[in-house]
Image (cartoon, rainbow over all chains, first blue to last red; front, side, top):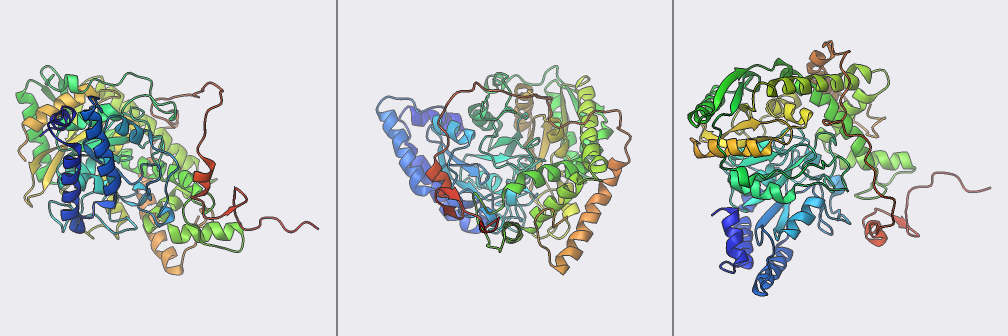
Length: 472
Length: 88
């Protein structure tokens, strides 16, 4: 049943929010011992909230368009009074004194927060193996990773524990796990969704977005969380796209670029799936054109200078003074150092050092400054491409879900799993992954649609066409 | 770098991280080699400038709730190891 139909059943009193929430909690209890999608399950609070929703319906009130729908939240989204750790020891047990704007919006729409999901520490990783609290496993095959960094949110939806979840995407952290778990994942236009209350990783790239079982469900969630917020000065003032209303617009007359640079390094079966997706779109009236954007090939390198630079600055706040955990030292510097040394995991340390290096005197121009100029080059290349086509099509991830442990000792190999998703973040554009085929190993393959800033209506309409033609 | 970032590394970590970071920076050499000096650097995808709000009083985050999450609190303040010596 679609999220809209389920919410409608609850809003009209035909279904109870408590029963729906209990089913979600039961599914979590049954499967999460193995999958480990959740770091914290808020069973009591969720059932109490669901009872309020049912009571509101009984009084004749409308609790909102997501009434009684269980939603899981990535553990980097602040929820007042609920543990928010970013899967890091340094924040273990921290209870934020405020709600993220997306949390407030979900509550206003009647959605039920059921728990916080596992992730790579501070969203740094592509497999959810960098969690300080143990990895999440792919519910489609427990020997495989779910992707990352929002692996817990992707796995929770893929396993049927919740119909919707939120993640964050800095270089692919929603789309890549969506592809590897076989669900829909959306990275919205930068600034469409407020980042207030999202624990910062790389502020000029981070964006919150939905995971769902279908394109329509993802649209429901995105429309609820989108919109201008004065608490986030990078939030856009543009009107919220009317995504659901345009979902059936189709692709007739659209020009879609099949981008060879978003297929580089991908397995043959992934490339074949993207080509099948292009045929599906062509079959519904889209004009498919081959397009090369060689500048995108520099995205990965630029990203791995820019994102760590921003992270090294953002993570300076974990100094053992105002929040989180402290390891004592004789003076302030010793306390700061001991706290950070014991509190951060290896990948976070690597990125902080890399960023510190890229920003240091003598290297700033050669690394950080240069990467910022390359970012401009990539933005210009996208702009030129979108002068010729309406949307771009490519792979989401180069392979299906890889085995647990496969890439943990080789950071560069791990980084390469985001090669097709990173360019979008540099440009601030929207992109989404739609499950489209199944690999030889029986695991899902996602294809990626990309569009220019604020093109969500067109993007989702095309994704809806792909979904109907999926060979998964 | 580790000192600047307030991190302490063991000898083994220094060896491992140096190798891994060299590999990542090696990959970044392609970016360093590009001639992009004529392009302006991008810090924000849509070039937003300053955003101002009306200067008016509004409730802020609850002090007790904030302090309840601090590792150490002294007289309604964040407590840290002594920074300056005793007054003479």
